[in-house]
Image (cartoon, rainbow, N blue to C red; front, side):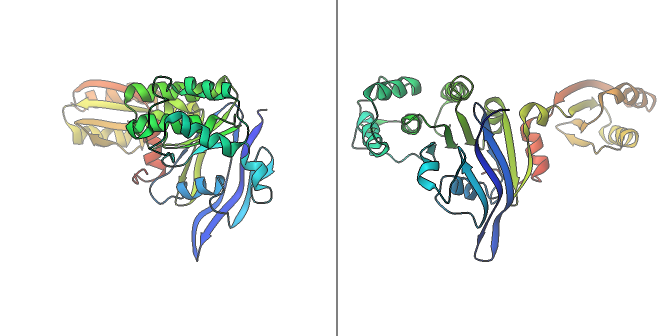
Length: 304
């Protein structure tokens, strides 16, 4: 069994009389990338702030490398590197000076480690330039370098690909996967880019209305059902026939009939459509995406 690096057990947070987060539990293990998703107001940001010690839970237990975050804060946080929202950087200083300034707060960091993280995040050509000349994506990379300086066992990233172009997002994704799978780091990442989460993460937790509604590995989440899309000549009649045979709600989307239908029923459905004079033009199978599941579980609320 993989070593648990981060564990939340029965964590709740109340502000005045309002419950923001209610009885949530999940764990992140060494060597995995764990995604955390939630719609606006679901409690995602509150949860992240509790994990990094910015606010305390009302009830429940948060442990990092076995250390209780409330009772032994310094020891627990010594294992954590994080970027929450935008990294705090000094624009008038160079990237290297920013790193060294941060490194002083972490204790003794050998020069070789600075060079290692600079190379890791791909800032070698610009590290001696002032940060106020950096793009947002470069600042994000420098923030990641800061988070990695002390070789944390847990890396927490909030919207890590902000400001990156598609090539940069791809490079960043591979970097994060490498940190987890090759170097054994536990990575906890929140993002509104569901396609990226699906490509980057091993497991994911979805929070809605302050509660965890699903936690599972990516393969299990998206492999349960396949979306079937029919292009037919009579949409309304075709919809009624498919719903009558399957009992599954069918939507009319972009001139197609769309539903999560058991593949074994396709032949029977096609025969029924043919007998009813509903011409079938095309049939397409499409695996459920993480975005489909997210919208289903959170009732289509806006993603933060």
